[in-house]
Image 1 (tube, one colour):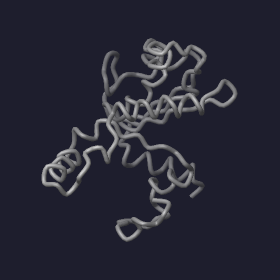
Image 2 (cartoon, one colour):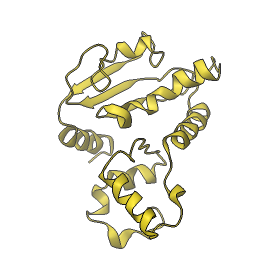
Image 3 (tube, helix red, strand yellow):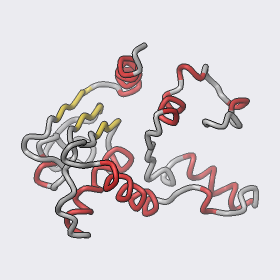
Image 4 (cartoon, rainbow, N blue to C red):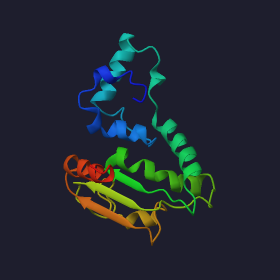
Length: 172
C-alpha cells in the first residue's frame, strides 16, 4: 500500500482507508482463518487454475502466530504495554490474543507481559464458554488478560462502531 502500486485499484478515497492508515502507522493487520471464507475459495481456485503460482503468497495461521510472537515479544514491555482491539469474534477476532498464553505456557517466556488493555466490538451474545461471545473477564482464566487489565466490550455492529472509533483515533 505504501508504495502506491495498488492505488489504481482503490475503491475508496485513500483518506478514508483504515488499511492505509494502519500501513502508515506500521500497525500489523492479522487475518487468520481467511482460508475459511469466500476469499479463500477464490484464492484456491486461482492456485488450481495456475493464475497464482505459489500457494504461499498468503500467510497461513501458523505463520501469523510466529509473526505475532516475534512482534509482541519485541513491542510489549512492562514500561510500554501493548493493547488489544478485537473486532468481531471467532478465529479472526480471538486468534491474536492467544499469542500471550502461547509465549507463557508453550515457550515458558514468563517475563512477557500480559496484554495492556482489551476492547472488543461484537454483536455476539456474551456468555461464559462462548468462543465468539466470551466476556472479557473469562480471558483472565485463559492467561490472556490480568485481573487489573482494563477491559471493555462494545456490543454493537462493528461496521458502524469501528469507523467511528477509527475517526476519533485519527483525529477526524
